[in-house]
Image (cartoon, rainbow, N blue to C red; front, top):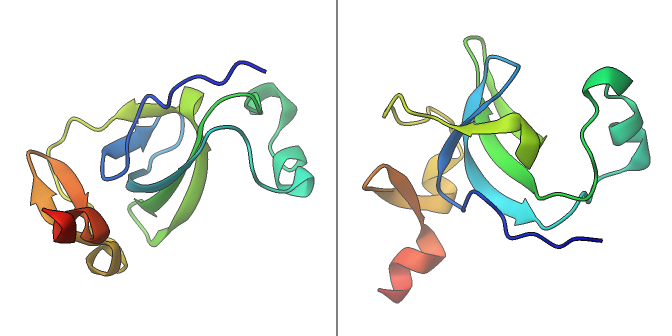
Length: 110
């Protein structure tokens, strides 16, 4: 299996390539690490490959906030420059620097 480097990093704001939501990355799996049932629930014509990084997002859409698990192939850089309005952001991040959220554990080291 080809273990590629993740294209996006923790704290980066991204948007989904197909669905109308955006979010901030709070964790990265080098390859798919969810249940087979979850993977099979995705319609086959849009089901992502498992051999790529998958990202855990604090996500938002026009109606609500939630946690999303998204393949790298389905993410794009969010270029709005707007912060993400998710209630858990303050638990994980110390704020923003140059458009990237700074993880609390990383912020305390500096």
